[in-house]
Image 1: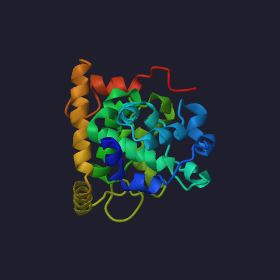
Image 2: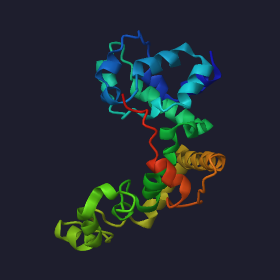
Image 3: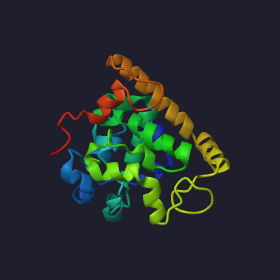
Length: 236
């Protein structure tokens, strides 16, 4: 048994996701991502079952493990009760843990997710935060979004929100004690440690690529590069 396969066995998602694959391909047939991306969950499960460390390393460095939308359609159709989506989650976690994620274009984007959604969760209590979605980073939002940003307080009040306000209500300010408890949960469960590894491996990759990466924020060369670059090989 390969060492990396042993590492995967320690992940409860892998334990729950793989019973015994008979390589029928139903997961690929039902998979929405496989319709558009160069993605084959049947092949991934087959490689994992081989327990071949070299092949698993290639998976951890690949674009392929980042195409899954985690919709779990595969689970609903597998005749053996496997869940390739859970196996993909375990592979992603191991890729982040060992730093292999920076070797793929889609994998490098984990830093963007961490610095935007990940930090919004810890700092505001929300995974989607209105103030952070600027037209500079999201020009596809167009002039309507520019107007929403400029008039958000009045608009949300008219819609019944409690934007950054105390007490109950949509988009209310999350109390500081709740944010501190949330951070403690991330610390105990290893989330903060995972964030630190994503940062550390990303800084190393940025140096290799000779791109500037500031300690915080998203306005720097490396973030702009991984946010906008598309090598055109992802779709079928």
